[in-house]
Length: 180
Image (cartoon, rainbow, N blue to C red; front, side, top):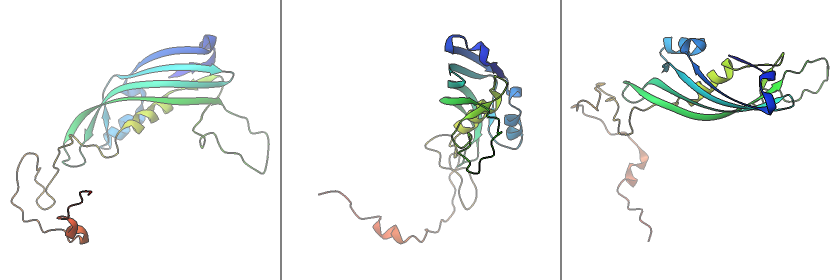
């Protein structure tokens, strides 16, 4: 997935991309390792604004991903619908050998390009991965697994004798904190 700067005529261009999962081999590798599994197609809407050599990209994507619940370990489907902004800057040839080094473009959140071509695959893949929740939960009411026997508490009730957690704050359980 590439875009030439010359295609951004009049300083602005709107593009829609319908991508296959095969366009993002890292997503396939992550899914093969037990991570989130994205489904085809991956839909992107991108608006490029060019100002000189700088290109600001407003983007939006919609995708369906299969995740594993962090509480009950069951697979579930979730829709990811996110907006993002990317800034592309030309790659600077480092002919200067200054002792003091300024902040790198990566540290500033900028994406470099060369030969007047924007490479879109890596930044778009990164946006997809950043939208995946860190601790996915199938539903807010998910009760998870019993810590003793491992039964899914959403499906069954277990008869385990849970030992109370020795918590020094348990004495505050019956205190009424209503404001007077």
